[in-house]
Image (tube, rainbow, N blue to C red):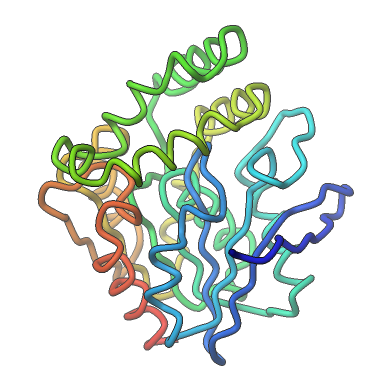
Length: 267
């Protein structure tokens, strides 16, 4: 059984739950996707145990962290991460995020470039598009009014490919359980945050090693979004995984860990 999570406090008094795996001088922060929690990264963190110390945490509004009223912004989530790194005594680290976590990672490197040694962007985007405020707002309103149960089928078919859902039913079930445990109001605020998130102006200023990975069948942040990230970030690489969908750290943790390990080796 894993130990209880530790807590750190942000500048505005919010408690952030986190787990620090001590594993070496190199340091990696992993930021989870929307409606998941720190455990999202367990398969990848386990594979990196020999390479670095790993910091995972529950973003504001998620998991065991506090769930204050909104509005939320990616920049606010980035400040939370800065406070958490201060709390554990980390000046800098390789920072990687999946989906929402990638948006937060981009906001973090934009605000604190000196604190990022390498950047991992998985199944993510700097901007969801012109229709995003309306689309994400509709999802937020639905969740706030009716709860998350009605979104389960929509989410799971976007998260995982057909074969994975059949062969890895336990992973799917655990992910659904984490999803359903969310506070609906905090989930709605985070949806609205993603709808207005636009970190595109920061991309040309990113000057750390950056590895981008996306599933070939990712319908939530499609390949074109990943290509736009690569085009915007100087010197970045792009890997496309055949047959994978939106949550590659759960679907293909070996390949995701390899991408992060390359960043660690260069840090």
